[in-house]
Image 1 (cartoon, each protein chain N blue to C red):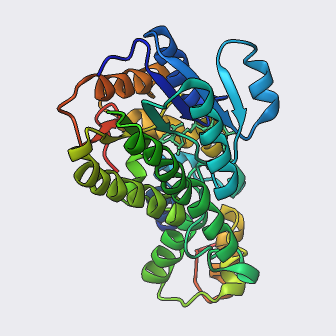
Image 2: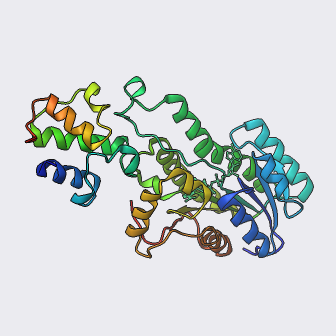
Image 3: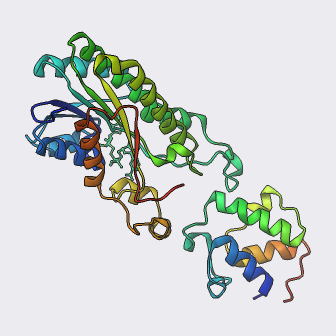
Length: 246
Length: 79
Ligand SMILES: NC(=O)c1ccc[n+]([C@@H]2O[C@H](COP(=O)([O-])OP(=O)(O)OC[C@H]3O[C@@H](n4cnc5c(N)ncnc54)[C@H](O)[C@@H]3O)[C@@H](O)[C@H]2O)c1
């Protein structure tokens, strides 16, 4: 698919990986629209991208923002479901006798922001794609945690669900010319990685990554652009992880 | 320090034996989280034949404290 001139919506595009993806898509000539909850970061983007305050967990807000974008730009060709929050909590925390078992509210919140969000956004965007006969592309940002990562019950479950929806939608929507793929990053050098992991853990990860470093946000953005550009890639979960397996 | 305890803890925390000193605390060891704590409990129970209750487990926050809890459980650490 031709990226130049395409209308691309990147959720969570005001920071981190989303910002790198939005920037790279824009460099390839896409009209990029960023949707994010972080109003300060959105205003920091200046006039670089069209942007909207968006809460991807809120169905009414999702519908409204998607409708507004379609009204303004005529269509959405590319949706990058990037908004998400890395979340660590083991099923059992033996050090906390008062609350030893994973808190259910935090479990639900992590599922809402990492899984429900992808369902809500994709439904809202694909409805317009189908009605407008747009041959579009959905890219979901998953994670290598989808394989199941210790200390990440909710996050792993959510990302695994994202992978399953990706394959399901590739099968359902391919006939309409809409492709759906996921990028599953490993450990990327971003603010969220640095705040979620201790320095010792990061050193351990680097030592266990065959290429002996963390990934860069731009490398995830390059993977997003590859799957969008290649019209025969559909239903793929592309790991961008330097060779590490968890 | 007791040689056996040093080697048990070095293995659990993936550290060199000379890094296992009484002053070493949970805060100094990046990998010492609640999952590591389960590895620690299982290793101590297996190596010393003790049963650790939740009240004991939450006290295992430094090498000195680990030694203290083991001694309270009747383990002879030779000091
Ligand atoms: N950084 C990594 O190493 C890594 C690895 C694997 C997967 N990921 C995934 O990549 C994606 C981006 O992560 P990141 O590291 O850039 O995180 P980040 O925290 O830097 O950025 C996430 C963005 O999403 C936005 N966001 C959060 N909740 C939102 C909501 N309810 N509605 C709208 N926007 C919301 C935030 O405001 C932020 O701008 C996530 O889906 C994450 O799970 C990251």
